[in-house]
Amino acid sequence: GLTHEGDCEFIQHTILRHGGEPVWCDDVIYNMLGSEVRVQPDDAGTVTFLHSGQVGDLIYGLPAIKAVGGGILYLAPGNRKDANFSIEMAEKTGTLLRLQPYIRDVRIWGRKESITHNLDAFRTVGNPTQENLTDLHLRAVGMGVEHKESAWLTVPPLTTPGKDVVFQRTPRRRNPHFSWKQIYDEYRDRAVLVGIREEQALFEREVGPIDCFRPHDFLEMASLIRGSSVF
Image (tube, helix red, strand yellow):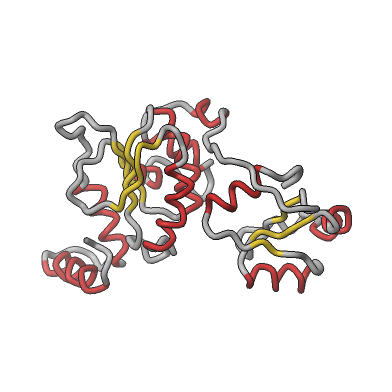
């Protein structure tokens, strides 16, 4: 598979030897994903999907899978230098994905399986930094944006005694105008932060003390959010 540095180096050197322009390793892999994926039904007519992460991109791609009618989802972790979508991350996401009624199974792509819908194409059908990611995934499979209006995640609710409000705050892509202090003052006695230890430390340093729930996987995180009164 194209998940090891040695493989990346070999592919990059091969392209340079044939007169190509210098490129980053993940660009080579992404180009190969786009050109070598056999985008066709297999002999049994199974509908299959391919996605290489990250987790947020993958979640926003689920309406496209549901809109097409579902099938088997193949994950290709480790294929982009700017992504932290590892095998471990894929496994933690898989428990949530397999629970969805439109996903028959979640598997790691071995580069030999036929793919009918390459969801990584969402990066080429528009501008992921300026457009809605769900819209781009739907566009990549030829479906309309109205499919994002219906729920695409099904999870059982999980509750924490005395804590019916869930906060989630990462260091990335914050809204500087969002008044976390005001929200905190209103809900802190009922709230729990869902996240990792570093996110709790940052929250307590910038906002205030908070209990933290560290989920085992993304299914547990989604269930906690589902069971809350306010998120």
